[in-house]
Image 1 (cartoon, rainbow, N blue to C red):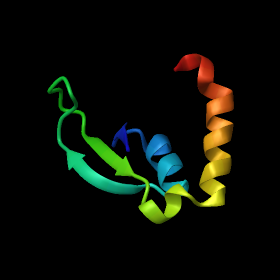
Image 2 (cartoon, one colour):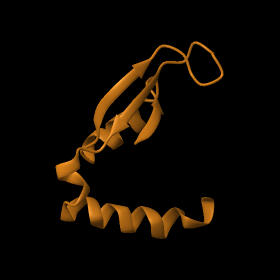
Image 3 (cartoon, rainbow, N blue to C red):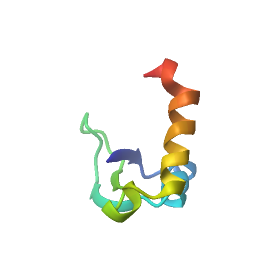
Length: 67
């Protein structure tokens, strides 16, 4: 599951293109500010899909130093 600022259309489209689906919508962020946040979830049938596994490896390799 991943939380995304709903106003960040590029991030929303990125995750939706990977197969994530909107799980919940919140009108405010974690600090109570008026920034809508969407909680996105990868469906169970996609979690083991080869395309997702490839993306997961690529994301880890390219961003592991930021975690």
